[in-house]
Amino acid sequence: MDVSYFLVTQFEPSRSMEGIPDEFVHQTELVRDGGFHTLFVGEHHATDDNYFLNEAVISYLADHVGEMHLGTGMCLLPYHNPVRIAEFGATVDHLSGGRFRLGVAQGYRPEEYAAFGVDKSDALARFVEGVQVIERLWTEERVDYEGKVFSFEDVTINPKPVQEPRPEIITGASNESSVRRAAKLTDGWIGAHVPFDVAREQTEAFHDEASKLDGDRRNGLAREVFVAETTEAAEDAVREPLMEKYGSYSDWGQDDAIESDDFDSPWDQLRHERFVVGTPAEVVEAIERYRDALDLDELKIRMQFPTIALSDTHRSLELFVDEVLPEIA
Image (cartoon, rainbow, N blue to C red; front, side, top):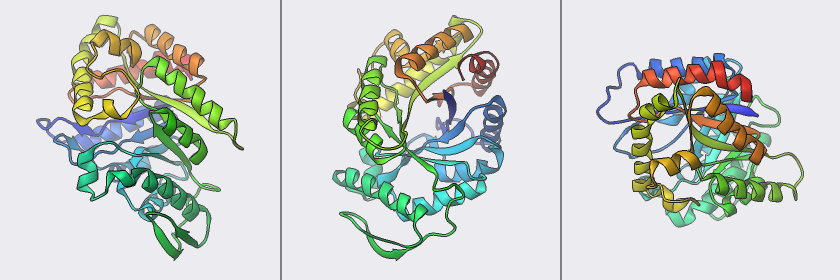
């Protein structure tokens, strides 16, 4: 099982942004040297928090990933012209030495659709056609395309990606229809922060769909992870930041967009169903539960949250590298 890291680029409005670029580099180098598979950077727009643009951060870090992969986690594809995203991905593939991965998702915030002037009713068509356009532009010299949303003739992008035949495309999806679409449309799927039983049901749906198709499909899962010397220290460090984060998810409407229990659930329920928090031994046991039940190819973890002290994230990450990763990777 590959273990990947989600680099948080969202910070509360009161936090100074001085030194944050160095923080991005520091965490990137920690996970690179620790043996993580991929560094993912997320995307959101028009928020009250300070939220750095994913494309800029990815380009900034491309020279720091070493042998690690670098990916969007996730590019909210319906907001964008896929020709531009194809060019961006090919460029980063060169900047990173052929290690780019394109994660794509539909997005869910009405404010973001409005900010980009995109009708949310067109989201699925823009998503499906976007993936098709990107894949063709990466692998064909000149492309004609006629879709519901995107249409063009004789388009090429240069340079083409380094990777042959192209970089991997993976979908972030959190309901059964989207999971099945991920298997049919892209190279793999990374599940969102749904409860354990829902994750198991979605994994079964993914494998069922993938079994009907040629080629391999990778399945993964995202989880909030935090490690400390004691259970109490781990909970004390992340309880408030995580509850605030999931409160903001609820305010953004994410719990209406995915199959889950309510994000306003009590801490104990959220911790059991969505979070992996505790000592190194407890975290290993919890991750093995997911790995064995879901037959995971990849686990994507997040350790930093908008209001948490960065020193706490650093210590958790160091413990994870030293005492957890060797047991699960």
